[in-house]
Length: 295
Image 1: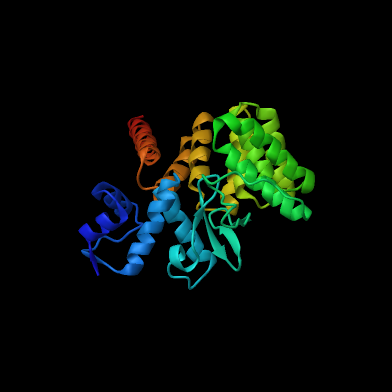
Image 2 (image 1 turned 60 degrees about the vertical axis):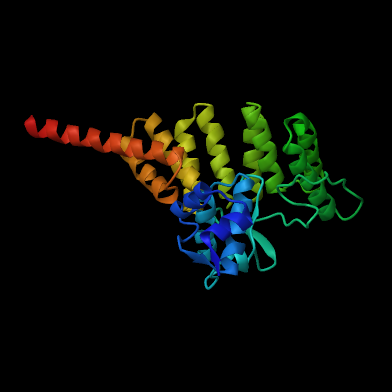
């Protein structure tokens, strides 16, 4: 067994990091740890280093346990890796599954990691599927550096030359165009992703963001609702749907999704904002009730 001090020393953690993960429900606070505990906490550390939020890790673990009943510890039993949209994928039945969205994602070998600082792979001749996978891996690696994002766009376009209905490539192209505020092209690719895979919750979420950004709030609401219907634990979709309802001046509808969000993300600045919104809406309703009684 390892003491708390041993854990911090071996994994090069700070007490604050460990305490944050305990508050997020990722780790149970205890005076001593087993070797398997160390392995689990190391995986949490590595995912956080890839900028995956603790709340997302916890949501992914819970969703994975529902997807694969009987799996006690997905971090160790199924392994875990970060995807390019800062979510967690687990190996399940020989494939990588993103459990929150309920989608299988591209499966990469050790030289084709979804989030990587290794040398950018150069596609070699082969089957269309292999070439598409290599170009996709190249696009992800290029996407990490703002200076090479134009090359990333070209790499994803190459993917589509080999597989025109490659949903993940359409999503990543859409996000690159969205970040450049080219909302027309972003929408085009998000819709293409949905045409390729109508159950792609992330594509509905991203499309909702474009619709919201371009003033089509009612359409955005319906799109966020589709994302939540496909993935009920999709915290970011609840958050953005609540914001959209605030824009349409429907606070009671927003309230439901603020409350759903804080159950899924219990810490962090977005959770604080959601809690403030809940308090504001409830106080406003109380004032209305008092006013109506006096009237």
